[in-house]
Image: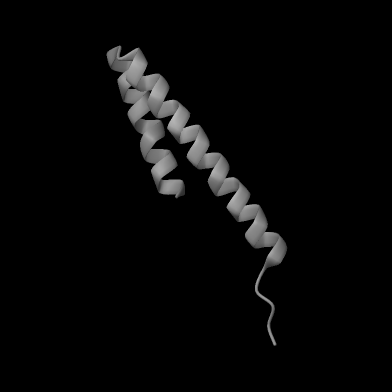
Amino acid sequence: MLSWAVTFLIIAIIAGFLGFFGIAGTAASIAKILFLIFLVLFVVSLITGRKRL
């Protein structure tokens, strides 16, 4: 999921550089959402963790 966020971030940077502001805004929004989802899942996995028996 983090790779998807980085991919959309790169798309947003390239689109912004080329002047496609609508596409850049959309890709940046998707990258932010995916990064937040990744961050929440990472924190949840740290809290729960694997318990060894």
